[in-house]
Image (cartoon, rainbow, N blue to C red; front, side, top):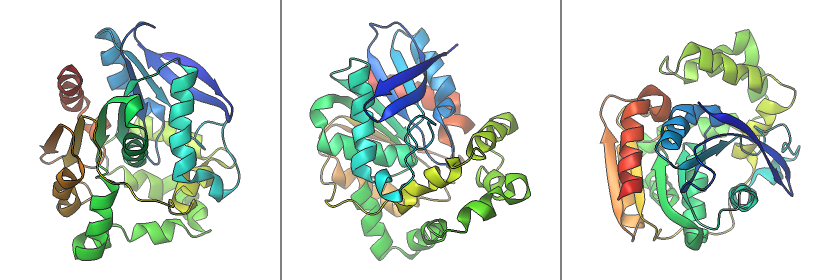
Amino acid sequence: MTEQLGVQTAEGVFDAIAAGPEDGRPVLFLHGFPEAAVAWEHQVAVLGRAGYRAVAFDQRGYSPGVRPERALEYGLESLVGDVLAVADSLGWSTFDLVGHDWGATVAWWTAYEHPDRLRTLTAVSAPHPRALADALQTDEDQHMRSAYLTEWRQSSTERRMLADNGAALRRMFEWQVPPSRVDDYLQRLAEPGALTAALNWYRGGRPGGRVEHVTVPTMYVWSTEDVAFGSTAAFDTAKWVSGPYRFEMLEDVSHWVPEQVPEVFTALLLEHLGS
């Protein structure tokens, strides 16, 4: 079982789910698009039972209490700042960080810019940002996989995604996420301004700097049927981690790793945290 939390920060209150003893080793989870903290419900509950203090929060735009209107307020500097603000509010000086999809991108940046705050990093699906940037330049397959990014920045995207009872959003999950969970995500995104806020992550502009080598102990989990991220960036991620590195490739699994194969991924995560 998980509990509901409200995490107070200077930006507002982030909604969160949590499990485990207050003095347990802290683990923070970052969800992707178009999901929410509940995507990590299985992992949070299992880690809580194992004695960790596991927390997953609805990130900027997904939490109604932190939903700025301007796209510029969704840049990576703000998103990384939210991670640290939540950790500070929870009283965590160091913690383990786990991210999927957009949450993994934020996690990579956090690990690079604030290695002193992280005990370990676990990134799921999204490769190291430099590996992805290089693949976009050199790999036609990755270039085609990422074509949606331009479309999603257009102002008509919200209307298209929510039309016909959110049919386009539902197709994104490839029937690999339980229908009741997808219904929950769509209900959240149908709230006034919610989908625009989520899409503002794509419209927030590029960061000023570049991510270089990550030094914290890192596990990267990639699945062979991921529609967004191909093998070139996945395999090249190793070049951008100078600390202890573990790469796990899941065969015949889609982009939605934490929800499609929750037991498999959670076992990998517990191994990584324990090592």
